[in-house]
Amino acid sequence: MFSVNQHAAEIDASAASQYDRWHEEVHQDDDLDALSLAAWHRSALDLAPPLNDRDILEVGCGAGDFSISLAHAGANVTGVDFSPRAIELACEKARRHDQAIAFRVADAQSLPFADNSFDVLFSCECLEHVPDPRRMLSELHRVLKPGGVLVLTTENYSNALVLGWLVSMLRNEPFNSGTCAQPIEHFFLFWRVRKWMRQAGLAVDRLAGTHHVFLMLPRCHPQAFVKEEFRNRFLARFFRPVARHMAFRARKQA
Image (cartoon, rainbow, N blue to C red; front, top):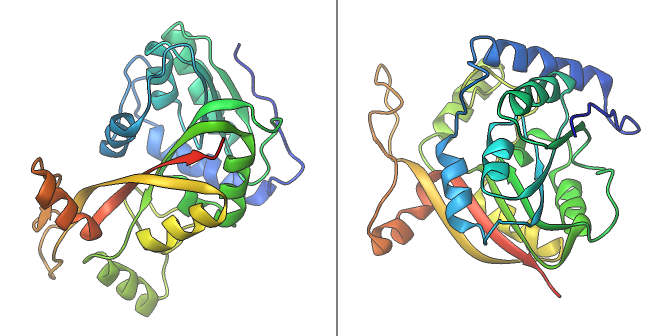
């Protein structure tokens, strides 16, 4: 089922239109027949339970690549995003990949689903871009079935990227975390996000980090002092606090 159903009660039209323009710019050269997964999507899959025949919701699905990949794995997938334009792109990609995914426009802070609706939730790099992250986490807890699993990835700035934030503040300009500055961008530290998840009733049982940013220097490429991932478990755990992208696995108590 492909639908662009506007759950508009609490979606700010101005912010949604800003994200429409952002998606237009970022995805203007996309090949709709190809799927593009980021490192955080791979981290999310590493933490995920078996997906076959599970009812899955992806919150902040963007142009739909990860939702389509989950459907390829045999899951029953619903994808939601704040941006109508993102959902249009996601629907078109799903058609081209012949995947029956229920895409719809919805606010992550007020999801249009009944309590205890989904076996597994995914949300990748979305939490830092909503007005009220704690409200979003409460909603994720509400729609997750008891015993269900949430896999969430988000930015973490307990590393050299904090210098980028300081420069942005001094220049009084938006912080650009990657491809174009976004309308909403929160400063996150991973232990703060973990605390919020626990306060929302989600029991965090595993963390993983990628893209470890050790140092940033003027006139040096931002990737110059970065280690993408550590295969050694001890090193991965030791350097996890300086990972830029943090993945959390949590469960809703049965």
